[in-house]
Every structure is written in structure tokens, then in C-alpha cells.
Length: 449
Ligand code: SF4
Image (cartoon, rainbow, N blue to C red; front, side, top):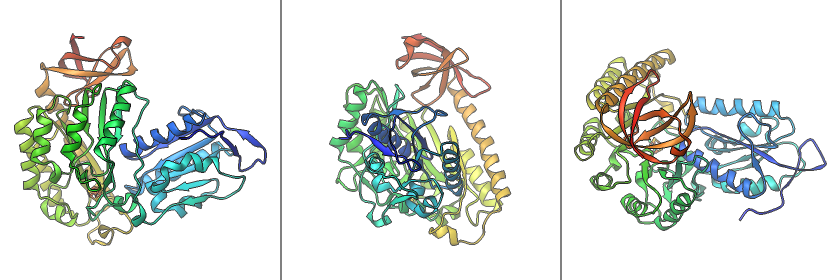
């Protein structure tokens, strides 16, 4: 597909120069990560070498996020730094920030291309077509026109791949700007995704994380269901493990739970966005459940999948969240006892209903709440791992080497370490779980290869 002879005319140089290296920066979610990896493969197929972090490149592609104001700012900082350090390089910004505020990015002197989410799959060709010019070219569309599906999966890590199975969201939670940046919920047909999973297996990767904006909503555009997808992927040879990156609690159906409980490949690990443990705030957020329903779904999973790991997202400092509302959230989390919390301070997003709501929470109050939940998360994780200590588990070993050790994850997502052995990379072994160290990593004793 992408095999043209690649020559770019540098913006400050009328000479045609052969381009060799391309550097990538990814902000935000695993969906962006899978998309960056796919954009990178297009460049590699076009004859480029991917620059490692810190190495000079001829072209930089920054895949941006806009989930918070902080994410926007981080993107601008990276873009400005790259332009300053590499004045001759071509700079391309894509992703959700590029989709939502293209002009803000185009106004940064030195940016060459701003590409919205619909056109991510054409970045290689657009860079190839760049002429010698100053100023940025913008390729974006209206939210209603975000209908394309850029098929993507990540490669590079030998053990795990992030496979994009779904894009967009129809939910319109009051704080969220993602439906404006990503469009309506849509997906590829199951058969196409099976072929992608087979391609991942052929690269030797043994674990796939199903990734999307609202993955449980899979099937909107093909009339299939999420369970249809799980069932078909389960039959793909060469893939030993699947994880579901995140699923809305109302879409964690009995059918999904029963299927994952009965599968050897779908791991006992769920990431579920709660956002608040206070029903009044959940209603203001326009979430599609209350705490009773959430707790009931967690209980339904636990009844069928013992030892299941729950990672839970929480937003603190939503407009109107009082100290008492926050305490209600803390008590709810203590009751349902997830293994881990992903905590985010609320960030005002333009063009969302929450941006107009009264009762803004002071940043220092929100920061204190983040800290409280961070401490709770550490406690919950240690308690979850303590309950698993002494048990047997299976670990898929990764290539990272640190201090003479290698690392991997159990089925239920406990990070473990053992002395490094190159032969063990990308293998699955049975281990006995030991205690957590100061870094929150469990010592693993190998039982069998
Ligand atoms: S479910 Fe809500 S929070 Fe998640 S992407 Fe959709 S609108 Fe945003």
C-alpha cells in the first residue's frame, strides 16, 4: 500500500533531501498508541527508520490527546521543544487535540501539518506530498463527518499488542469531549479483526489488548455484538491471552461475563470506569448507571471469576462535588474494593455541558482528593496482592531488564519479577507469588517452564 519513493522538500531548504528517520510521540490512550504504531509501519514500509527517543529525526509525528487541558498543554510543549531542537525537521500533529483545535496548533510557528482523526491513515502520503513552504496545512473535518475507521494495532513489544476494535462514542457524558474528537461509535466487522489478530499472532505476539473508546458498544455499524467478537478472537491460534482495555459498567453484561469466565484466553482482569461513587454526581455526569448497579455488576463478575482484578477510573473535583460527595465516593470504593484506581482531576473541556455547570472545585481541593485516592489505591493494591500471595499463577514474561530482573504479569494483572533469563522472554510459566517489594512488584518463584 505505501511504497512510494520518499523525498521531502525541507521547509527552509529548496534542495531535495533524502529523509531517513521519523520520530513519534504518543499522548493519551492505548487507542492512540495502536494508531501511532500503525502510522509508523507505513513510514517503515516507505523506507524510513524509526528514531528512538532522544535521537534526531527528519520528521516528527505527534499523536495528541485532548482528554484534559493538561494533555493539550503537554502536546504544545512537546511540539515547541521539537521545533526548537530540530529547526529543519517536518512536524506533523495529529490526534484528538489536532481534531478539536487545529488552528491552535497550526498557529505554532514551525508546525507543517495538522491532521485530524479522519485522516490519520493518510499521514505518510500527506508528508510525502509536502512542498517547500512555510506555514501549516490543516486537514480536519466536522465532528459529524468523523465516520472513517483507521484500522490499527501496535507492534514492537514482542509480547503484547493493542488491537483497535472500535472507535467513537455515542454516550455524551457531560464532561467528555471525546465524542466531538472521535465521532460516533463504529467498528470493523468481526472477520476483519480476526484477520488482524492472526497478523499479530504471526508476528509472535501472544497477548492482545482489545482497545477502543467504548469497546463494549462494539457492533453499532456491523450489527454484531461484543460477545461475537470475543468468541471469534478466542478461536485465533497463536494468541494465548486477551485483555479488554476498558468497558462501561452497563455494557459488562451477563453474556460478556459468562463468556470471559469460561474462556482460557480472556484474562480475569477488567478496567471499568466508575468516575464517581456518589449518585448525585453520577447523574450530573450523565453516566448510565448508579452506584447500586455498578456494585451489582462487580459482584456478578466476582461470583463467576474468583481473584479477578478490577482497575477503576475515578474523576474527582467534578463541578458541584462537595466534601461530603467525595467522602461518599471514598466509602463506596472501600466497599467494592477494586485492586487499583486510576484517578483524574476533573478538567474543563470546551463545548461540554459540564463546562457550564456551577460549583467549580478549587484546584487545591481537587489535588488533595487525587492524593487521598492515590493513597487508597496503593492500599487496595497491596491488599489485593497480599490475598494472592503463596498462590500459583501463570506469567507472560516481557523483555524489559532492570537491575538483573525481568518482569511479567499474571493472569489477574499482578506485576511480578524474577532473575533475568533471555530464554524466558515471551514465554508463559507457572510461578508461585511472593510478597510485594517497595515498588509494588511481587517476587515470583518459577515452578515450571
Ligand atoms: S462513555 Fe462517556 S466518558 Fe467514555 S468516551 Fe463516551 S462520552 Fe466519553
